Amino acid sequence: MKYVKIDETRNWVPRFLEKNSIVRMVGVYVFDETARTHCCEATPSYWLEFIETQPEGGPEDEDARAAMYEDILQNEDVSDNNSHYAHCADIHVRYCDIIEIGDLDGCEDMEEAREYAQANSL
Image 1 (tube, rainbow, N blue to C red):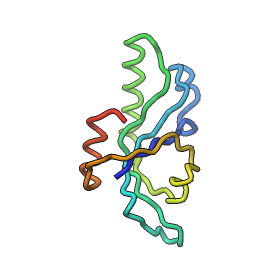
Image 2 (tube, rainbow, N blue to C red; image 1 turned 30 degrees about the vertical axis):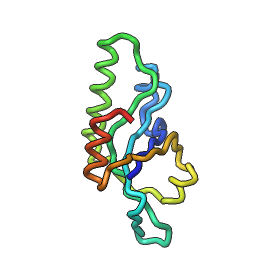
Image 3 (cartoon, one colour; image 1 turned 60 degrees about the vertical axis):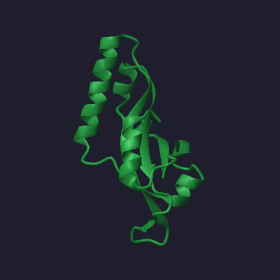
């Protein structure tokens, strides 16, 4: 099992980013490198299971920071599901704005990887 961090800043409203002094929004996902799916095409894909959004930067004021996180959580709740498929090649060549890829050693399946990632800061 692995995790991947993807720059998703372009998916956020610029005014929200500016208001909160956010430099970059990072989506954190876990995936099983051994499970490849062909979504009606020859190119295999991984299922990326969404964990959280991590803002880089943000307001220094504690109350403003709490409000920013509340807005982020509300946006995640509005989205039906942030999990999605991504081409394996895009992940391996770090093509799609990938910031970091790492191993989740000791995790045997997706559920265990998701629980580990949600309980620990990646």
